[in-house]
Length: 123
Image (cartoon, rainbow, N blue to C red; front, side, top):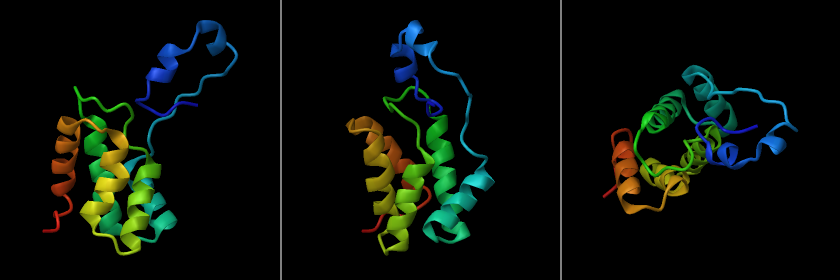
């Protein structure tokens, strides 16, 4: 299986190798289902879970970026678990989501601004 939006592996695979596998198309879960997964896996409340799902949806829609992969539900769970343990929500997203997606300064700046729209940056 391949994550949605993660094309590098698929493009680089030789046709003879691809023929050894079956292909199944998956997409990210619907927002409400992804929210429930976050609540169940991390124990965070519905409001915080919704904000994380919204952030992921916005990042997944970005065009013309150097992001190699889109935001996985796994990264959202990591951020949620950090928040549940008392991390500042902005910092949890920065370390679990933003820094996992890119180390390019211009890309991380955009992602940080997007996160700040949902979770205030602690001063």
